[in-house]
Image (cartoon, rainbow, N blue to C red; front, side, top):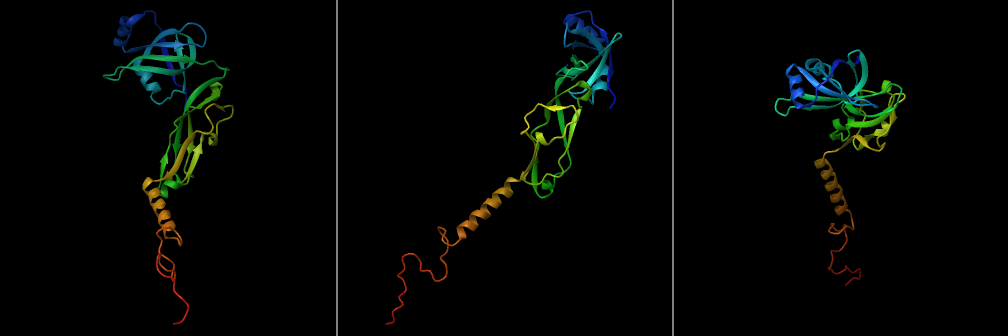
Length: 225
């Protein structure tokens, strides 16, 4: 996927009135936060922004060009109108080439686990992990194939294969996906095991073995009358 490039302008005005004026022209007020120095107030074309970032994640680096200067940045936050969903404001966070950064990357699982075909249920409690790397090595997403998972098997963060230069920060023992029996199936197995144990010879309530006198009955005598 080619890098998204957004054209922006320096924004001189401040305050809510100026922000409303900018929105009326079809543009979006925004702030570019640098790793050093004061934040840069900008505005950008609303339609270009929506078309450009509709398929990017929080870990995708976009290029923001501001009147001849270029910045690599994350889209860190977008404020929306709660009524019509329109974007009111955008926050960008600049990243520096050649300097390590930490970011949360989304995890996308794919494939139908073997255990699901055997009647198990898939659970996927983790949807993103934190990594450390240089900007050029940052993955937009991490795809994980779970088709080989069987019932009572799980895949952990430590099992994910990361690209060269990408270091794992999240806990290695966190579960990404697991397959377990359906609750009804588990209860059925427990009932079957309990019934087998109760029917075993010598178990409380079990039927006496052939030739064994019932409790309280007189023992048979071998003496002839």
